[in-house]
Length: 243
Image (cartoon, rainbow, N blue to C red):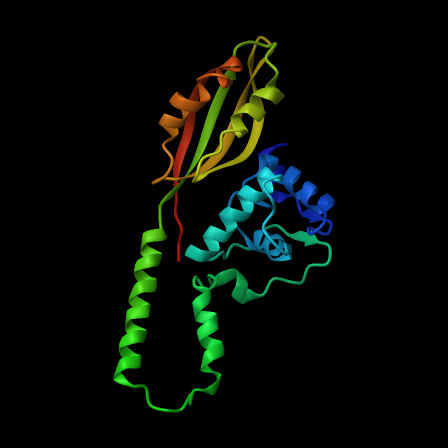
């Protein structure tokens, strides 16, 4: 699949709360970081909200994607439009769900229920003002702590020869799972003499993943070096998250 077709294809899924729906979602995310395109969009929110619960670890790609979108919503929200996605039985995405991160603490919801008998028009006491200021400062500090830079990385992975099984090579590469590492789109690129290299994208959280270390300690050691001869970083770009 070319990058342009990957970017523009409208995705469609059956009921995502069934085994068949989760299987299709997991297969869809095998070569993608997001539902459509190269950044989180309303398409991801449509699918995210259609799921009644997080996918189990049985669906490795869907589970990885779900946790990533959940983290983005908690930190900064998602505003990109997307290319379009259809999910059987899902409702349209509310604008508030896309642009506004969800409440980080379930205690706030419980507090709202307990406030039913409170006089909303009464004057705020000094103790209440101080408590509100402390809560706001705590939330702000927590948010700053969670924020971390991200980068988009394009890697060339070369096999030993033209007899190397490229499908198994890619499966071995994608089997590397690290906190803050998200594999994306890939394609095979001819290099000559019948040999093709794997060109694959990934998104990393800068504070959690070192690409150089990953290559040295994961991609070029046993058992993956059975397929991989060498790895090169083709492009390394910081992702700007504008608020």
